[in-house]
Image (cartoon, rainbow, N blue to C red; front, side):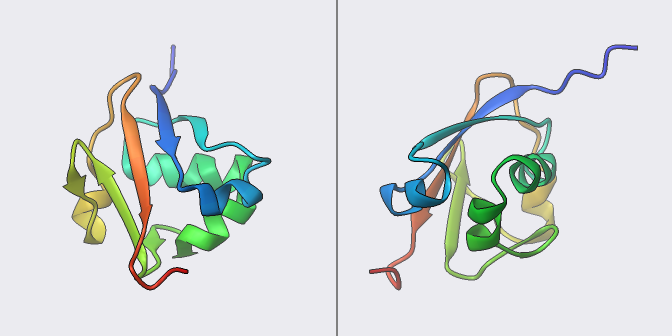
Length: 96
């Protein structure tokens, strides 16, 4: 019964490193974007609060990409992740 999730990398803009202990890349355990957000909430709650409004919902100003595909809506949260995959968060134009 091995329930190991894939280890993926969440790349943050430098503006968020203040919330992640100075890290710009976070190693998380997740098989989907939704699981990634859950693991983020457990390990880096301040980063999660900046990115999410409630479980499973990204803030409107957050742009998250998997394989250059913008994560949008609930379908985006179901995107499967592979071991070693990078998920990129970009600040929107509204951020200073």
